[in-house]
Length: 158
Image (cartoon, rainbow, N blue to C red):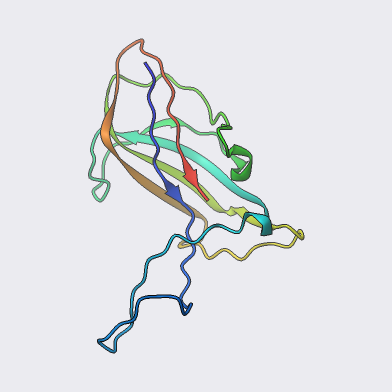
């Protein structure tokens, strides 16, 4: 049995500007959407320090609840090393039987960074001082049975 979650956990940069967009007739500030390609040729590393990956049976991540720690690697991973079908093992665990409806990843922002192709540090604005928790809802809960096995794959989009 193979478990798979593509929980598009995304590092995102929001940029305002550009002239190639739909115009607004209301005189207000337009809010635009695009899928700009990531400038991989300008970046040599995207290092993310992963503290833990946790799961819960409750899909409501806005309320206090019990999380089960699946793995706690407490180490840095270069996201550019896990492209094109490559994976990195975060750890292994025995998962308690149940249906898990949400996954969260806890990262240390003070130990995460971007390195540009010329070796200089990339500018990253994190939403918190040292810890960032990213929650992902699982559309179809992951059901684990006692003694079952499978893979849990987290797709972290750069």
